[in-house]
Amino acid sequence: MAHRFRRSRSPAALLFAVLLSAVALSLMPRSLLAEPAQTAPGSVTDLLGRQVQVRLPVQRVILGEGRQLYLLAALDTENPIRRIVGWRKDLIQSDPDTYGAYLRRFPEIAKIPTFGGFEDGTFDIEQAIAQKPDVIILNIEAQHATEDARYIEKLDALGIPVVYVDFRNNPMRNTEPSMRLFGQLFGQPQRAEAFIDFRQQQIRRVTEVIAAHKPPRPKVFIERIGGYTDDCCLSFGNENFGLFVDLAGGDNIARGIIPSTFGQLNAEQVIVANPAQVVVTTANWQAFAPGGHWVGVGPGADLAEARRKLAWYPGRPAYAGIQAQQHQAFHAIWHQFYNSPYQFVAIQQLAKWFHPKLFEELDPEATFRELHQRFLPVPYEPGYFVSLQQPEVSP
Image 1 (spheres, rainbow, N blue to C red):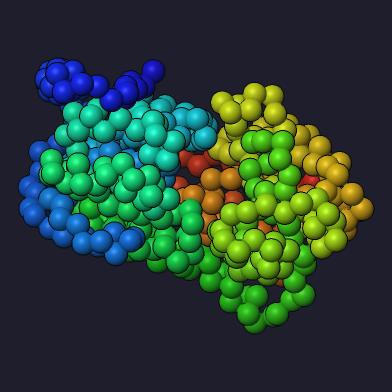
Image 2: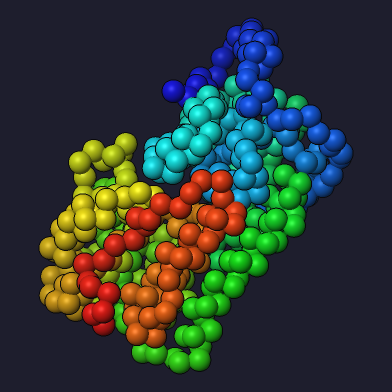
């Protein structure tokens, strides 16, 4: 079981914690410690435009979100966890199947200390300091919480830089600069560029076809985090999955209603819009909603069980009488595409659902498999998407 950072303590307790941490580091298996490397003072620009002084390449890193492993693993397939000295526990809880895949490949991942979030006030700065990180990488949504608590100033005074990245709020704009920033930090700029090139190629396989053929755009409703809560109808505006829908040749019905990336429609708005397709972003959320209506798509998912659980959704009041209900045009897709550099796989699968004949030869499964073979240290396991429609049925 992963160690957890504890709550803030007195100065005396902090001194003890630092000394204890030093002893622990001396006893820690070498596989969890970064190999000695030549570092030098450097400067990077983060996603808030801040110039940050960092010794490069970094050797001891705290990830402000565990799901940042999605990219780090693409930069270091030999051992992506060797430089992680602490991380938020969200990967373990929100994506247990991916965590399990990495645990099987790198058992020492279970020893990485975990902590809560900046946003909910459960981050313990004292324990973070005790890990002696070269850098702390945060998502930009943590900015207000870190500013309110003056974490940046406190860490800076101790020589611990903080950089911000973004894969969630504006992923189509910020994924590539975030990836380049990771490449700089970890001394892998060429590999980061190779990943970016692959991503761009795979997105063009959809956008160039849509631009050339200009097919009619079906109305689409994205139900965000289906089964995580009982709320209806959480969705996306004109970013993240909302923008993925547009790139894939669909018409996101929430585009003109939700002014930002995330928001909510009411059931009446969905019924009036009458979408022809409903896509549920969902995952294995047993840790948050035991036995809930989430559809457990993800690596190695039981797709027969996933399809059975997806069949519950057409009966929701918000979908009464809409076109998607009449044609059973309901689909479930791995929610973590919204917060990873793998968005192009989601775009390809959405295009297959919206325009099956136009994209008959496109194989998102093969794309994701190639991504794993070329860039990731764990094998590909299918199970990331499922539909109530048979592949040959057009919307």
